[in-house]
Image 1 (cartoon, helix red, strand yellow):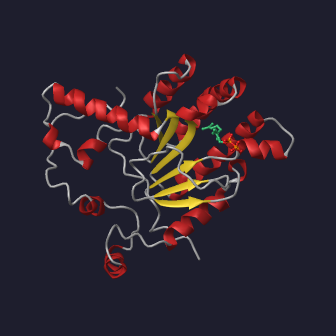
Image 2 (cartoon, rainbow, N blue to C red; image 1 turned 120 degrees about the vertical axis):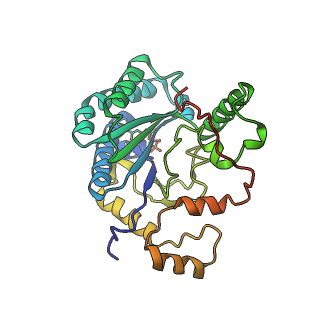
Length: 279
Ligand code: FPP
């Protein structure tokens, strides 16, 4: 099966797992695996850029990763800082917009500074939006969004009756981004590990045994092909979907699909106040 360039996902999200095991298999320490993992990041970003995939979100450090040995945590933040510095010229040259999603609190100050620099210097680009989930947790993101919604309500911005799924999404880190169409997890585990819990409601999930440092362009293309072989129904019948595909030939999520999935949200009305996604 050939990759159909007309039917690519708009947004791919990746849980990059297996760096540690990759290193251990080579009698090296886990940090070595993370370094090799950074090379795999480069190749997937380039591939998205070449194919014209518009959004790529990578899970690089979860809220739970703080439980790792101190030495590994320190090395991971060091590696991330170095990577952000070294990749900034590439991001600029390739018109890639960089975003951090996750909690700023707890991130080492020097990394935070580098994140802000990368975000500021690439804010006007849009050919590819690369979001790095750092100090991120899906449940934490949802509770944070609920707090922001309540704060707006207390300030008179809206009433409780205005809460609906679409409105609520505007309080997430990913406000304004389409939901992922495809989630890839490498490293053989079959779980989502607190990643984009709200946003992946209708994503296709792809799991592979390949350890992240070994995940290359060909593997990424394989995942895209598998995505294209799936029938995305959004609650419709298979016949309805095939009729619609005959018209558009596209299998990424459309706002009309989401609107219909959320058709029960009759009370959803536009709001005036939009939460600051980074506050
Ligand atoms: C999971 O592998 C990987 C991480 C917790 C960190 C992800 C970091 C990278 C891919 C490298 C740096 C990233 C960037 C953006 C430069 P694991 O350690 O859990 O592997 P294991 O399951 O084999 O132990």
